[in-house]
Amino acid sequence: MVRFFSLPFSEIPELTITAALDILIVAVLIYQFLMIIRGRRAVNVLFGVCILGVIYLAAIWARLEVLRTILATLVPYTAIALIVMFQSELRRTLARLGRKPFLGVSQLERREYTQEILLAIGHLSHIRAGALIVVERKIGLRTFVESGVNLDAAISRDLLCAIFQAGGAMHDGAVIIQGDRIAAAACFLPLTANTHLITELGTRHRAGLGITEESDCLAVIVSETGRISIAAFGEIELDAGIDRVSEFLTGKLDRRDMLSSPAVTHSSQAVREYRP
Picture (cartoon, rainbow, N blue to C red):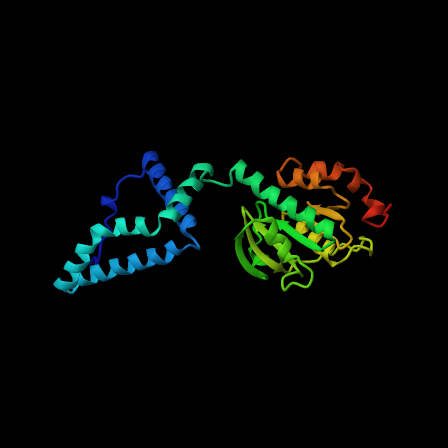
């Protein structure tokens, strides 16, 4: 039997626990590097460096000695040039790595952006501006993010208040928060199909409840009367205070706490129609 090619499996080294751990660490470092430069000017510079690398390999393959010599001469100075050009970005990145673990948001950052959300909610409630803020948890909300206006901005009180300013272009719809970023605004959410909700709850409350029926996210609703409500785990709690919202945002409360809340316990009359 004629063999056209042979696979060199015998030359592949054995995959050991140490080798697997080595590959995993390198993969995590590459992922974190890509996440750090995502959306920054460094992406374009890195893309340009890759293009120069391809041109250099093409020059070697085509025996273009002049071009190869010029590129080879520039290579030792590339790293220094990048450090000088992006010293501020590198400083911020190192500071960020110093206060943030590789897998998730640090407690300090969580407190910082939680405080920004609470300040925005308190101000919106004070001026009686309607708002719907959805905080993503383990289940992704990418489908709903794509239905709105992409922002990918840092969480801040001023930005949230500006989004929900009456008459603004992004006032209608929901703001979706992913991690420590405002992913999108003016997002369309599914309305709850629960027919037992009382009619006084408007579209904003129904959308906030509907999204929590499809995922494990937390929705904070501010009505135009200044009332703050929380929707989570397919339940809605009316007249929730800032402290209550803070406890949910920081993960101090779970589904059992939601169901045991007096506001939700009384929801058979305050939120839902009575069912025997």
